[in-house]
Image 1: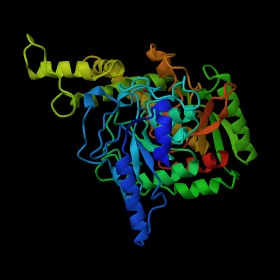
Image 2: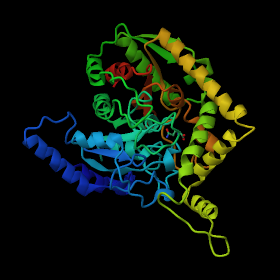
Image 3: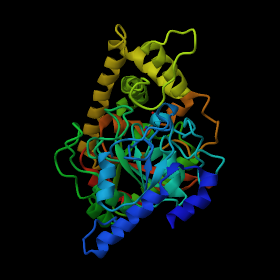
Image 4: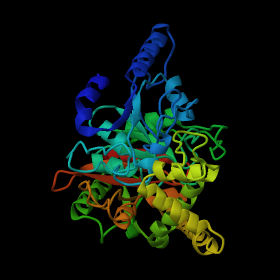
Length: 455
Ligand code: GLN
């Protein structure tokens, strides 16, 4: 049924870079056969899923939406993909994204834009616009994303879907193509909060193949979501983040946010305002730390090991260095090049302390702000994105305008804490608005209860 929807919706949406219909059908048959043989299967067995093309899939082309990886067929599965297969979940295909997950609109894909199912003149958000649009357009009931600075949650907000960034280390990054390793996290995209909890329990847990994977067991998220459905939040203390409101947030976004806060109160939650003063530096710190790590991680695309290789033209010596330069010039898009240049500069001798070193200190201050806030409240809330879905081209020529849209999602990545975006109604233009909960590290269950209560 989902393959049928994909066939009719894709000409309008373009959420998928690749549909793996045959593989999905045989995986669905295999799950049926296991069930028929009397095997007790996982809760999501047989439920199909779309996978962001930032996550490697054995035997299925994986490009990160970059020309530099065109034609690369991974010889192994990411740990999360292995877990999907073990759970009996058919993989429908690979979804579109901003190249190497760098962007907020999916306009930086080397393979065309993905359209927002609510209004195809508008972006679906990014970088994981493909996964969010696939779920929003009912092409897939579930999807996987990666979130380095909001790439699961912001597309969730802009497409009226649920997007969750787990605690850093809560879901294995083995087989996630690296963007900025200290910030990257794989997580669920879904239509309901309970679905997200089911998927997070399926993909999470300790993985010895990821050195930053948390060794302790994951919290009980499905139980927390079910608890939330009782819509009783008595005893829960909710903190409104002072720095993530007011100026720069669209009126419709603020209005829906305030109504949701009233609902939380009506369900018994105690709501207070909390200040995290160093959040005003979060965007600046992120846009130093992230490109620094990007410049280092993307050094591996050298024309030797994977994908594209462009030899120098006649007259230019065919040295390894020249081949690398021609390959990287042809293979990377403008936004990726911009970040490699920024990061290389920030890390270079003589500038390292001033840029990268300072940004890391700011990151510590932000972590301390979160620690202090969580001494006062159980969970923090904010709008997910200052704006609803914007038009194609509106921000693509102005990188700073695009970066500013990440203001509310970036802090959770810098602090490694879990966060979820859920739909909170539509604005006056009938465009969806996202509501974000943020919880302390390793307490992802604390997100799920109020999120399920509010949805
Ligand atoms: N929009 C942010 C960026 O451009 C976040 C990207 C992400 O989470 N992968 O860096």
